[in-house]
Amino acid sequence: MARHEFLMPSLGADMEAGTLVAWNVMPGDAVKRGQVVAVVETQKGAIDVEIWQDGRIEKLVVEPGEKVPVGAVLATLIAEGESAPAAVVPEKAVAVAAPQPAVARPQPAAIPARFRISPAARKLAEELGVNVDALTPAAADGVIGRADVERAAQAAKAGAPPKPGDWQSQMRKAIAAAMAKSKREIPHYYLGTGIEMTRALAWLERENAARPVTARMLYAVLLIKAVALALREVPELNGFWIDGAFQPGPGIHVGMAVAMRGGGLVAPAIHDADTKSLAQLMDDLRDLITRVRGGRLKSSEMADPTITLTSLGDLGVETVYGVIYPPQVALVGFGRIGEQPWAENGVVACRRVVTATLAGDHRASDGHRGAVFLAAVNRLLQEPEKLQ
Image (cartoon, rainbow, N blue to C red):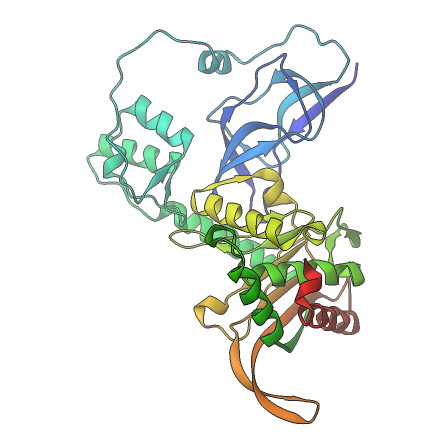
């Protein structure tokens, strides 16, 4: 009988552990590849965790509420088509999943509109009788988590008010550790070039004029598609450096950097960006931004990016010098679009120009290949109609 282990996934280089919030399956349930089977809470919010094997759940090893390290076994799975022995479920998991008689519990007050609460934190608040209306989320994304509830409960026992900011500090420490590791271990090289955007923006304006307001596109989708297509020409920038060697990405999955409410940053993947139309990319981008701000992402979106793209032009930044997010080997940055004198065919005119930069891992590529990549991005943006 083929038995497989379902492990706690790594949802970023800065993640060491996660808290299992809830199971969406029970022992004996059939599951399909890509199905969301659990919710895990991390420092970046609640993540819907997908399974990557067809089969049937044999045993739930971890109970809701447990914090487990990356790589720990969460459940065991029997291959599709094989029979499993009688399933064994942790007693606490049974207690959580089985219907319970109605019990009067203290109910937390309504949550202020500016804050959200994770499922695990809501359940814990109900059990402990904590009034979440009095809480201030410590996480940078503005989501009330289990740590906030536990801190409030402990403070109530001690007669002291809860201290906000502890979890935000942990998040910043995790990010700092990942970025320090990147700068310490990755030999970065940096390249930059100006890209004339007048044609691309004029085309986008005409395209949007013909669309309903709800279907109009941001210029960011042009950048995503141009980067994705350029990676076909320079594939050594699309992948990972693992165990001393470059591993090509299984697809071109562009991690789009999105700011979280209250601070912090995540870069979930837009999968197969090179094969999607601009309209599809806009739908994906809109959906990602909504879920990032709501603190709900999928594990594949956090684990799959093969390159990161960051655009800070809306904040007035002219040039972005990024830090590669390991184990990726490249990061592309775009600044604001500004008017500049631009010489073309011997004529100087005012043009709208953006500065594009590349941070590359010198172990996986070199400056020449990086330059070829930026030249490809430039060329593609000069013919926006072909990006469709």
